Amino acid sequence: MNHVTSETFDENAKAALADSQLRGALRNATSLFGKRRLAAAQGLTNWEDLRTQARAIKDDVLLHLDQYLENFVSQAEARGAKFHWARDGAEANAIICRLAAERNARSIVKSKSMTTEETHLNVALEAAGIQVIETDLGEYIIQLAEETPSHIIVPAIHKTKRQIAELFTQELGIPPTDDVAKLTSTARATLRDRFAAADIGISGVNFGVAETGTIVILENEGNIRLTTSLPRFHIAVMGIEKVVPRFADLDIFLKLLPRSGTGQRLTTYQSFITGTKQNAFDDGPEELHVVMLDNGRSRMLAHPVTRQSLACIRCGACLNACPVYQQIGGHAYGSVYPGPIGAVITPQLMGLEKTQQLPYASSLCGACREVCPVKIDIPRLLLHLRGEITEKSSPEVQQAKGRTMERFAFKMWRLMMLRPWAYNLSARVGRLFQGLVVKDGKIGRVKSFVGPLAAWTSGRDLRPLDQKSFRDKWASDQGKS
Ligand code: SF4
Image 1 (cartoon, rainbow, N blue to C red):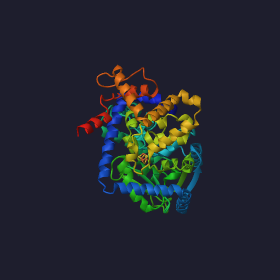
Image 2 (image 1 turned 90 degrees about the vertical axis):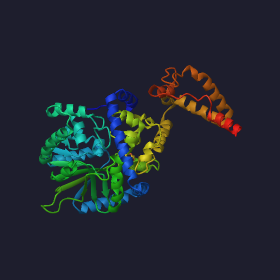
Image 3 (image 1 turned 120 degrees about the horizontal axis):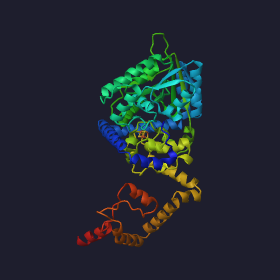
Image 4 (image 1 turned 180 degrees about the vertical axis):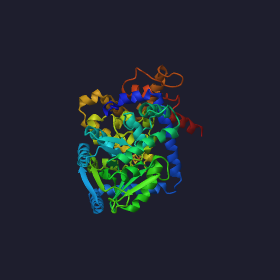
């Protein structure tokens, strides 16, 4: 099992940067999804309107969450669903283990669900002696590899075809092959038997419709349809923020989510589950239990800045667009939620003490904000969290982290920006002495640099100052004209 934690993000990132196979797999996948997303978004003339509407719906939900949750629960209960409320991951897992024990369940099939990854449900179920099988192909691969997901929607994004082929040979005993069709049909054949034998199916939830009590789950493989309809018992695990007011709102979210995530116009399957089956010949479970998870969401909701984190529909677009994620992948974040949104959510779920490095895992370039279908201002959230870290850290901690130096540097910068003569003078001095560190027209790794400058140049080149500044050029052009 992958034991990397958020506390060691810097070291995790360094190790990831040294793994050329990982970086190759990430580069291929993220650039492909990025291009597909762009093409899919350009295919809709009202893309920006849809984003604005989606955000307005989410803002309304978050402002009146209690009311929408009440409606959702009463509508679903009227159709046979039973609800359980969990304050944190441990409570959610305990509820699910109890439900399984009461039904003498020995085998569970599970569809992809970030919420159950968040609670580490598999570990709890296995500790209770219950066998749990992931049925999404990507999740199945990482379960076989005893790893954690490295992407919100593509859990095995970090693995190459060759690595998966070797894993299948090792774990499933098939002859070595890199034929994708053979690999997927092997997984399908293995999983089909598990569906038939499972006592309980566990799924996540993409949207819960307050108006009708309907649970909506999107997927491409058909495994969720089987997970939620073949076993007699279905347990759905849902974050409290996943509710939308009206059925008609799905029109917007079902256009935005697949296009943003994989560039698809629509996912292959959309399951709408409203309560339990009413007649013997209907499809669907005899019992439907919905576990509503808080786990820090109420805290996020209470703060006017962090509240917008809960608008996330887990499409994964910000991960694909992020220059940091593109280089290091998801495991370096040490959390089930990686990338820009992970750097925002994880500190709020796990506390800033153990996740202090994550809000700094961003260049604040804004690419995540540009692609987010619900217009979450992730850079602003990152800055807010950085501010909290600074405010809460003692002077000793700040000194240990090099923040004293950072503060000093920004104070000096401010002084210079307020005094043009000082700015010009420092630029001239810089130009004069940069020859000491410029090589082949660039400033590469400079070990003698201190603090953030040394870290910055360890991974990339710094461009030297031009011999003529923009102001000089402007002045001379003005003179000529
Ligand atoms: S923050 Fe936005 S882009 Fe990122 S996963 Fe959530 S909805 Fe998608």
